[in-house]
Amino acid sequence: MQFIAVPATHFSGEQLTAALGDCFTDYIVPFAPVVDVFVQRFTAEGMSLVDSCVWLEGDTPAAIAIVARRGHDARLAAFAVHPRYRGKGMGKRMMSALLASLREKGVRQMWLEVIRQNPAGVALYQSLGFEVRRGLCGYVSSPQSAPEGILQETDVLALVRRAGAEIDGSLPWVLDPLSLCTLPCRAWTLGHRAYAVISCVTAKPQLQLLWVEPRSRGRGLAREMLRALGQQFPALGTSAAVPESFTPLFHGAGYTTMAIQQYEMRITLRG
Image 1 (spheres, rainbow, N blue to C red):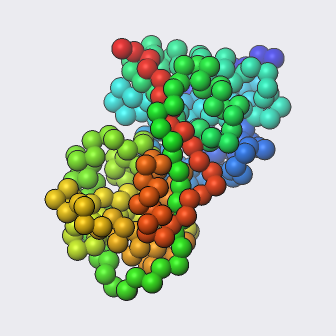
Image 2 (tube, rainbow, N blue to C red):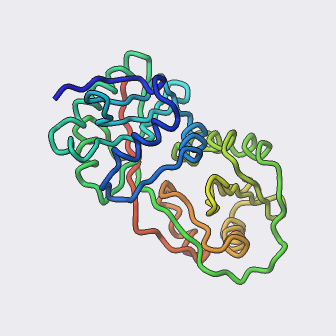
Image 3 (cartoon, rainbow, N blue to C red):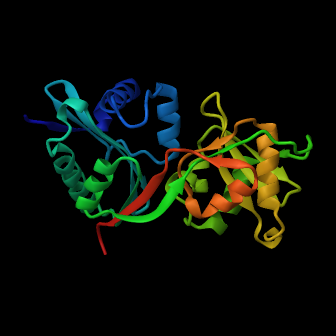
């Protein structure tokens, strides 16, 4: 089998979405991307069409890699091999070529998230030199009894500027405030001391950011904010990209941990 690596710049949004859906067939988590959601989500995360790639066998997509860029860092936002080509070592060869290309372009380190319940995926990335940095979880709220009317809407961009400077890259890529600059979302505040951003990409809202200003920490405001959000947005969830060190906070606010959990992994490409 011969595969041709084609930059994602040669494909439309519809074609990339279709290729991604086809290559994720029979994946551990059902994945059926919608064009608008694909474009909004990956654009917000810094998708680089120049660095992203589709591998073709003839005219048929055999694999796809979506790469995001921020400065000298890159993230593997998605990588999937079509079922008919899995288990043949194709993934490692394709990823090795992709990493070599990114190294030549000056990328210093690359990040990704992989589902823990996907041992083949974890093993693939470890064989390429990726190392586990931390565990990631997702959470969903339970019915809350917090009083209504305590949350006020606030400006998203102003919050992104404040929180982003203080967080300074310490959160996983998809939760970094930088992802909120172009993502359809709304921001809320609790007494102008605790803040949250809820994305509106899909019909089901998702918690993208929870931030308490430094001088107001240690007073239980994050837990109170989570409870208020759970009351205003029933069954509010997060992505499975929250550092698992936050589990006590979410459990204390009445949230439960989702079944799917991930590892954040990183590889250094240049010293």
